[in-house]
Image (cartoon, rainbow, N blue to C red; front, top):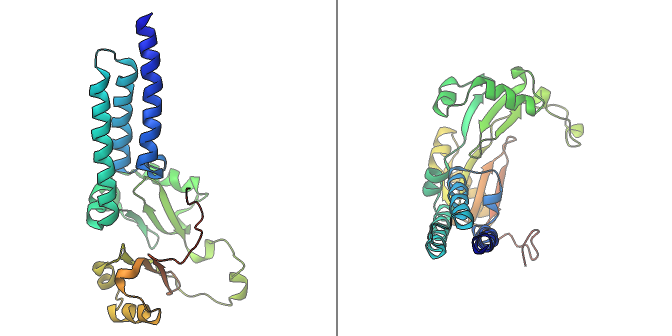
Length: 237
C-alpha cells in the first residue's frame, strides 16, 4: 500500500513540476517544435516519467536532473534569442523546396524531404497542381509555407482597386535582431545606403530594428524594438 501512495504522490508532483517548467520555458515549447524544442520535450518527458513511476531512482536525483536540464534549456533559449548565429545552429534555418515554380531536388535531398511529403503538404493547403506554386519553403518546425503565383492567389479588397500587377518578387529579410543580413543584401542587389536612408527618414538606425523585410511589392516593412504600444495584446499579467 505504501508503494501505491508513493507512486500517486510522485505522479502528482511530476505533473505539477512539468507544468511549472513549461511556464518557465515559455509558449515556444507548446508550439510546433524545432530541434531544440523536440529534444527538450522528449528529455523532460523521460525524466518526469521516471519521477512518477520509477521508485528505484530517488526523487532528489530526478528533481536535480529536472532543475539542471530546465536551466540548460532556458539558458539556450535566451542565448538563441539574442544571437542569430546560435539560433540558426540550434533551430536550423528554413529550406526553399520550390523556387519560381521549380522543385529544388538537391534541397529536398539535403533535408530528407520526399516528393510524396511535398505533394501531401501542398494538398493540405488545397493545392493540387504544382503549376500554381511560386515558392514553397520548409520551415524550422517542419511545416510548409507556400506562395502561389499571382494568377492563383485569392482576391482581396485591395486587389479590387488595382488595374494591373507586374511580377512579384520574393520577400527579402534585411535585418533580424538588430543585425544586418549582409548576404541577403548582396544576393538581391539591395543597397545598404538605400536601407540606411529609409531608416534615417524614421529617425532610426539598424540597431533599433528588430525585423526588417523588403516585401513582395518592394516596400520596406519595419518592426522596431520600441513599438510604442502602451497595452500590447497577449501580454500576460
